[in-house]
Length: 180
Image (cartoon, rainbow, N blue to C red):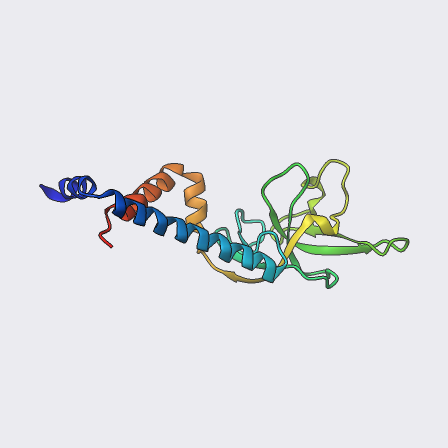
């Protein structure tokens, strides 16, 4: 009958109890992943402890597809640090280097100006209209480490959603047909 016939027979032979057990197993896997993510958020102090570099603006230091590990502490942000920030009105975070730090004398608040290493000018054109500096609440974290190329999986699944659906379908079929 072949592989497809065996898979169909395997699905037909599943009993309700086995299906429920596999559903609970899948739920535990998803729950464990969420718990690990939340623990990383608490440990790093960052709302997104891991991000993928989506463009070439930080080359040669970080290439498209690199995964960055973030940490956010109360230490002052310094010129030269690589930060990940959100801009009002944009949902995708940006990874760039701090090129200027501006401290307001009257409040003590620190504001920063960023620039991609591979870009000609600073990021003021990327900021919200009328915004000249980033405040602390815009910054998600500082890059403390990276894994080269591992983020390509995320980029490919985002740019070609059919691959994501095939992968999810294959994993779901694997869970349903497993005989544990």
